Each structure stands twice: as structure tokens, then as C-alpha cells.
Image 1 (cartoon, each protein chain N blue to C red):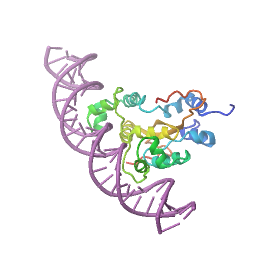
Image 2 (tube, helix red, strand yellow; image 1 turned 90 degrees about the vertical axis):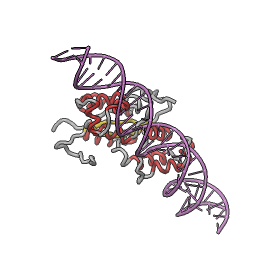
Image 3 (spheres, chains in turn red, cyan, blue, purple; image 1 turned 30 degrees about the vertical axis):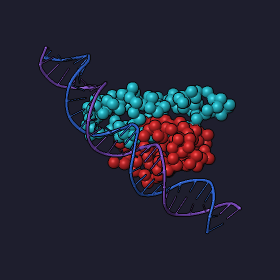
Image 4 (cartoon, chains in turn brown, yellow, red, purple; image 1 turned 60 degrees about the horizontal axis):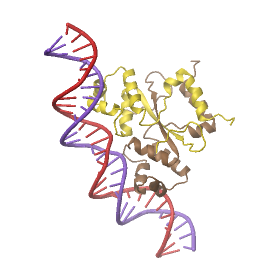
Length: 109
Length: 109
DNA sequence: GAATATGTTATCATGTAAGATAACCTTGTC
DNA sequence: GACAAGGTTATCTTACATGATAACATATTC
């Protein structure tokens, strides 16, 4: 109980606004679209401009960002999107504490 | 210069073995395969057993884990793999410091 | 209200990841 | 050395993400 958990660690870390800007974890596929949109807008890019950077069409960007989209994009697609807006994608594997743990109600099925 | 960077933050965080076990970032697609294998073995599963959990074939697991594989898996594939071995996949977008920054030689193209 | 900028939606074509089966390669055990 | 367990590789099929084009919906500006 005295040992800081990852939750604590994260909470503390995110209280630092500098760190917060850099560290952004998210449960995959759910927040993903909104996150992507945020990154793009933050970079001051329109879908069309981003599309050009990625040598594709704005309609494809729109589809990728579409929240109600049922598609599960390829890893490389997200990577390239991230890179195009000035970010680098990293993957975290965090243990599922299926037991009596605290805030672990992220599991869907 | 005096403000701690994400690098420092991460370094400090990872010095805590408890945190380290939970937090595992990786540059996508490169370490990914090895990471997956490690997670599976750590869970005490064979490819065949994991395949059964995912209702697929061991050959498909092998292909996914194959380091020399040229495929870029779908996000959902990694998610399901992770979940099957007791982990949850999270995505981090970390800013590309393309400027005069330190350890930022991860960019390929 | 025509023109432009931004984003959306539908559709079809194409590329490719994933499903499935089978054959092979170890390594270890009897 | 037959056998089984674990993993690999090849091939074919199927599913689906992405590419591409076009038409539409809103603003916003002139």
C-alpha cells in the first residue's frame, strides 16, 4: 500500500505540464481518432495538407479520423500519421490487473 | 536546461523496478516482435496455446512474431495478442525533437 | 449567391494482413 | 530411430485497410 503504483506515478507525472504534453497514453482504438485529430490540429494542418504529406487523399485522412469508423488501421498507418504531425508512436504493454485492483475498468469484453 | 525532459523523467521512472515492469515503451515495429515473444513466453504460453486462445493457428502467431517479417500488423491484432497474454496495449505519441536534441536518432527516413 | 476552404460520405479498385492447411526442422524422450 | 512438442516456412484463400475519385455539406469571404 505504501509502494507507489503506476497510477500514482502517472498522476504525478501528468501534473507536470511539460511532461504532460509529451506523454499521452490511451486505450487503443477508442480515443485514438480524437487523439489523431488533436495532433493534426495542433500542428496547424488541415486534412488536405496532411494528406499531401502522406501522399494520399483527404478523404482517407477523414476516414482514419472518423470516430465512428469501424476500421482497425495498420500500425504503419498510425506511425506515418504520427510522424507527419511531428510525433513518434510508441507502444506500451501494461499488465492487466484483472484482480482486486483499483482503476482497472478499461477492459471491454 | 534545468527543466527535466521526458528523457530524464523516463530514466528516473524506469529506475524503479516496479514501474519498469509496467511501463514499456518501444519504437514501433522494430522491437515489437521481440516484445511480443517475451510477453508470450513470460505468460508461459506456446505459440500453439496462444493461437488457440485467439482462435487461430500457430503458424499465424509465428508469422506475427517473426522478426524478419515485413508485415505491418493491424492495431487490433496487437491488441488481441496483448490481451491474450494478460496485457493491455496503449499508444503513446511522443514529440519528435528533430532539432538539436539529444537521443533522437530513431527516425528512419 | 458564386467561390473557396475544410471536412464528410459513398463507391470501387488495389494491396496486403490474417485465416487455414500442410510440410518441414529441431530438440528431447522413449 | 520413431515419436511428440515447439516453432518455421510456403501457399492459397479470404477479409479488410488503404488508394483514388467524386459528390455532398457547411461555413466563410468576396
